[in-house]
Picture 1 (cartoon, rainbow, N blue to C red):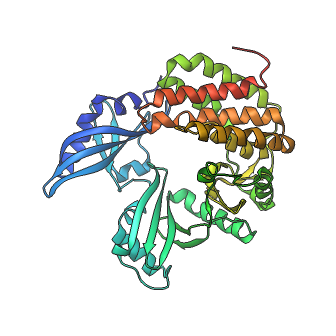
Picture 2 (picture 1 turned 135 degrees about the vertical axis):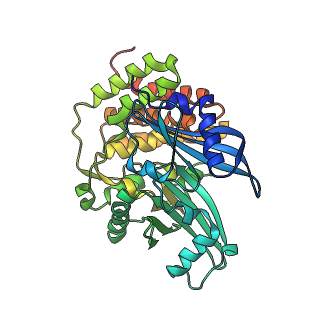
Picture 3 (picture 1 turned 180 degrees about the vertical axis):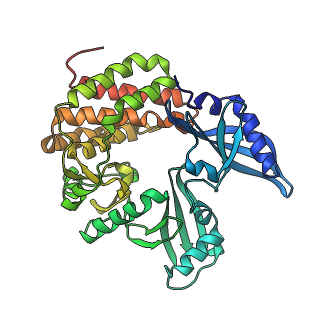
Length: 407
């Protein structure tokens, strides 16, 4: 089996590489801990580490990133520092100097972000670094980052997407396509040469928050209408493989960290792949990653749709299954919250069943759950084992509603 670097980057043997990288920058590594892991089994592994470093000017907490590959390093690896452990080369960088996210240094610091907003005339008057509050919403090393920017005076909120060069133009086009069609996608107020896409905050509140408040956040029919309102031009964009197409890949990723689930996962992925083989790829306009975190609601209505990077041709069942999969795997709920989500699913799923094939819906939802089950380990949650097992049990429950056989 090709060595994808996972064992090296997730074990104690990575310390000499981290130490060498810090010393190369003029610091001394005091301690470190694994923060996040992205693995493509038998291909590559990228990991980040929270490190305490003593610099000549004092101690600081830093984020270090390391990428290892089974074959040759990629061209963008050369933007990082290259180190050897005696057997292989790895790319190492110090946040925010991510080798694939060239705009991250600009988005990570208030002074540079203020300058960017001012040069782009985004606000009615210039702002200073002291008027900005920056918070990292999401960071997938070497893939993407999202930074929330709050301006104190005048109060405005923006989200900065830090993108890779090869996807930047396409994602910008997708935002414009939906806005021009009247869809409530984010308004792009600024783009930069280093691939930052700055959008204005949408109205309302996140559906992820609203589902736990009294009353219904929105009718399920509104969710279907929103998706069906996407322009047909979306179906002419590049096709993104649905989550179910990679169920075997995600099952292997989970099995690699929890071998005791391997047999169950093998059965689940076989049932999903076989059950979905009769459905063609589809040419409906789809969101591609449709879940409660991507929607904004107000007054019992949907008023915004986020993260439209993934729009393209597919099947409506993929979008609705994605929402079901996410709602089925929310972690750390109290009993009242669990009851609220169960009630929503009990009332929303029958509505979705009238729009798409019920068997397809459940199998695709199970595939989404299996893909999400890689998250607790990647994020190094303290109880990642328990969370992962619970997610696989949830996927199993969905499959067993429609599967003809037991493992």
